[in-house]
Image 1: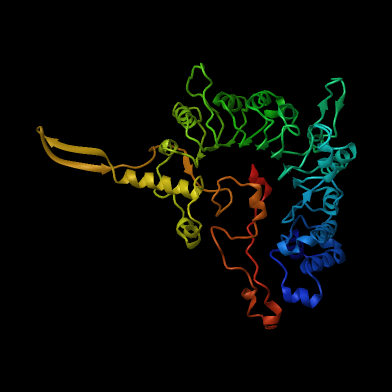
Image 2 (image 1 turned 90 degrees about the vertical axis):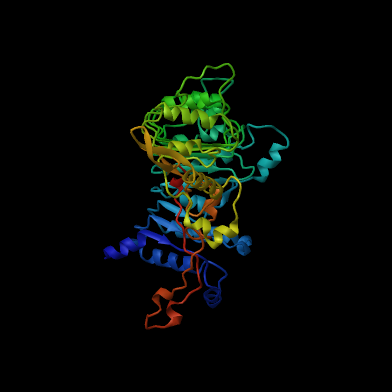
Length: 492
């Protein structure tokens, strides 16, 4: 019978770093020694394998790239040994609309909670695109195969779909759409309608032939939605989407590089999404007031919003309108603002005064060596800290003590940056500890094993067990990085 300690130990398995070259040579293998040992254990002890809910595998070394298919197949075999697996991290191969053993293995895990699709290019689709225009670049077999992978995911709550390069997923693969020729005919395999437990959705970097305003209107009910680099989604589509009943339950909304032109579109989103608790807006251009429109403050407002990430790279009226809206009581429950592009400190001046904004890691050896990238968080923290120190050196208040019209004493009080009594916290800390980017992105998932929290950390070489009587040959192993856990839920 399995012990409670054994069950807990095998519930979450993290295989970090690469195998020792000496051990690989001794076993006459080129890679995957520990995964093979793990697979053997799980297959021989099914009572332990059924309790594995999370599996982290090492990222493949670049010099092993030609053997990537062998590596993926090995990971797939370990996944097949875990019948109740909920999360697989560390291995995110690109899906090119071809049969993939790992994808198939994951598609059979009924308890899977999270999944990330990296949609890659397909030679047949690329050849077809030279002869015809979208839609119709994916054939029906490719659509059905991709959609079929979702049939058993009744427990899936978090789904991310990202096209790193020129990957294609057509509109009717996302959702069911009405046929233009016959509106009564609803077509498409619709992966999103196959996921009854879906709550958190991210769609990133698809062109207008794959995802547009019309596709957006047919999304299922969600709690969190992140739209990123979607050229087919306009401010009109976002405004219409906020009217839909399916959008009423959204608690977290992120618009990343969506180039919303008008602040009125943002205003409509915030007003109509009455359950919104977290809102993220990241773009280069400043959303402005439409020409001829009369502005009444608060121009943007949300009664329940608690966290606001507001990052407008190019200065404009957006920051001024946000500050005016907050002053007019448009965000009564707002507790945290993260504004990396607070150009003149207007947003910082609204928040609670802080004594220190820069982090210790900003002045570490690694932080100094990395330099200060324009638009990065280190630059934002440096500017915010400078505004603090400038306020400390400036006399803002004078107290004059006089008696019988005679001035006895004059006291000068230096100032501070912020608003006394404010309940809003001014934050410039990233989603990923140690990152110079405020918002987590897909590149962070690939780098999750490369560095420690807030800078370099000494790797593990087994020396913590050096007092074991068996000696060095028993406990010593190749130094491996300390893994930084990044959950896909961090995207929302």
